[in-house]
Image: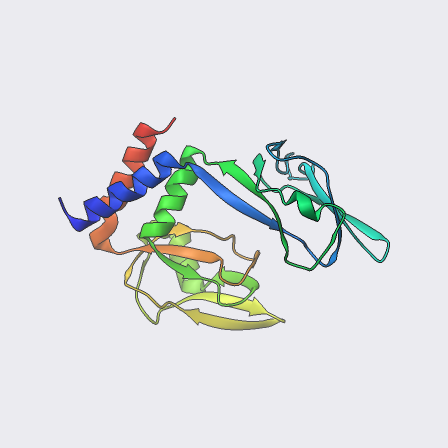
Length: 216
């Protein structure tokens, strides 16, 4: 058994034992908190064709008589609700609760892939586009036909009406996964693309096949 197989089995076993994603919810700014639900409550994320229907209300926060409602962006159940903060003043960024989101088959595959692919992340919060050459190749044959190597100009970062080329840093390989839509605003540190070295392609296919076969 190879080291890749051992690592692969460890990853699969971890998701079998805990097939959830844990979303920490924090105070959006300083203010007085009032919870709208209890520990263990089920919540839903945004719905509707354009995601125009808000999710379940999580909490209200009041500052200078201005009250804002914060809703869930995902489905799941509430855990780790810090009930002692109900009615109290908290600082921005204070952890309030966690949503335990059950992972679907597609989400499990994507989560595992982000562990084994080479992830190239956004250097700053900005809008991102593929470079003209990369976009042209994607349009012709798809992202997985595009081979990139270190120092290739692969993406353009648009910030404050200035466009800056972004150069790839990482091991050479194909663009296996794309995590952004060109023109959308992406947070700093969020993944932009996942690159797969040619030597790992059999492992990637093995992951996808096994998860599709073993998860409902």
